[in-house]
Length: 168
View (cartoon, rainbow, N blue to C red):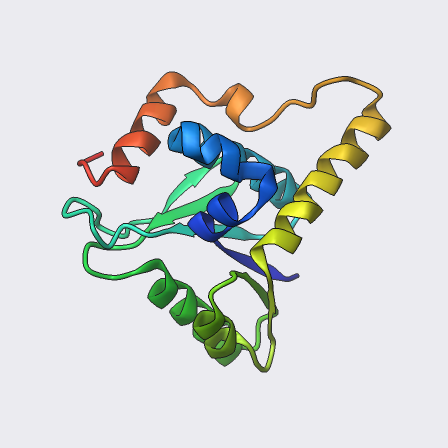
């Protein structure tokens, strides 16, 4: 089983699927990405999305689980790339297959090797869109249920507070 490690802001800001929404409402874009990743996790791939919390004094780097997706805001003073590179190194050392999704060239080169492969954020976002299109076609319904459809307001609020570096 392959572990997927996603650079959250790379995907949000670097792909047509999320960028427009992220410019208007970053919280909503994060929730959409987590929902899309939740569909991937439901298929059996462990998925971790890492957002940069380096500039948020309240960010503690503690992972939380939302809809089967592990969500991490890097600790204050530590950028997301550092967290992603460490996760890739751990997977490689353990002989575990992993896919790192990022457009950052330095992170791609640092993560790549052994059991770890890399993919550009925009290509991965296109795959997520294809997953949704396939699901809609298969289901024959205009809307698929997503993690965000089932996320209660308290969880949405907590995710928003964590993203701003406030205590959860």
